[in-house]
Each structure stands twice: as C-alpha cells, then as structure tokens.
Amino acid sequence: MSGSTPGGLGVVELNVGGVAYAASLATLTSQPNSQLHAWFAPGGDGVPKDAKGRHFLDRDGVLFRYVLDFLRDGTLALPECFRERERLRREAERYRLQGLVDLIAEDSRRVPGCITVGYRGSFQFGKDGLADVKFRKLSRILVCGRVSLMRDVFGETLNESRDPDHGLAERYTSRFFLKHSFLEQAFDMLFEQGFKLVGSAGSGTAGSATELKPGVDVEENRWNHYNEFVFVRE
Image (cartoon, rainbow, N blue to C red):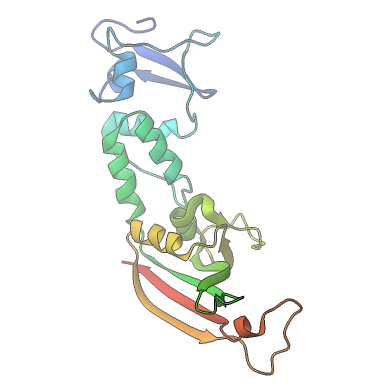
C-alpha cells in the first residue's frame, strides 16, 4: 500500500469527509473484523485517493477522531455535553466496530439525571353514530430537565425553537418540546437510555365556565387534561 512500510508500521494519510488525518497502518487495522481492516490490511479492498494522494473516506470527518481514539487504545472519551452520540453510533456501525458501538451505548447510560415529560390533550369522540369511538389527541409533548441530558436522549426529535439560550448546555429548561406527538415514542427513547418512570400526575384543564374557542367541540372540551411523567436515571 502506498504510504506505508512493511510490517504495518508506516503512516497512512487520510481524507475523511474533507478532514485530514494521519494514522499508522497498525492502528487502522487493529480490529480484524472491521471495515477499516478490510480496506487497509495488506491485500485488502483499498479506498480511492484524493488529488493529494490521501486515502479518501466518504464519512463524517469530525467524528472520525473518536473512531481513531478507539482504534488506538480501545476506549471512548467524549467531551462534556456531546450531542452526537447517535451519529457516532452510526459511524461505528458503518466501520463495523462493535466494540465502539457498545462503548457508546454504555456511555449514554452513564450520566444520571431526571427528565419530566408533560402533555396537554383530550379524548376526541366519534360523531355521526360513532359515539363509542374515541382516541387520544395531543397538542404538544413538553420535556423539562437539563439541556445536555435531553439532547442526548431525544437527539434530532428535540425542538429547541422556543428556548432563547441555545448555546448553554449545562442548564435546565422547561421550554423544549418534541417534534412528534407520539407519547409512546418518547417513553421508548427514555427506556432505551436507561430511564425509569418514578411518578406521574394528571388533572383536568377545562371548567364548565371556560369560554370555548371557535371550532372547539363542547363534548371534547370536557375531556381536556394535562399529564406529567417523571423519569429518573441513577
């Protein structure tokens, strides 16, 4: 292989998604079952080269630094408030690095904390002879807690548009909500990250004297409610 010496001790120059790296051939081939080993081991598949002669990988160049850390010493050390665990997991899977996939999963379950999930909703009833039909109707799922923790758990499904302090991760907020309205999806994401439900509460939100907004069904308005669920990871 160009750029390396016999015995696997040479230096390999890489262009990973536009970011330049250099690593020893021994590092790149340290995981025998990985895609990197298949590419760079003697007699391997190889990869194309860019105009400067560097081996080109069409992957996330910024996240590749953590892939190299794992290849070098078998560990994972992510910075505080790291927000891209899901993307890093996908990169690890693409490189067929199961050990790194396992470390990412372990790291995501390591930070303790509390997240509160709340929603305002109602039970909408069927009409035109279908009075026994009803389904849950949610307007928005709200999440409260430490910003960095909620970003780790909910990832790209988290909507931060109502929050004025986007840059500060080590703080608490009650202004985040989810981009979807599937309560069970939010619960599944919390359970997958090691959270447990420790408490819940609910109450009605509509009184008989409440003035209805135009287009609001009277019967449906009677069944308006607000619920909160508290999840904890120790």
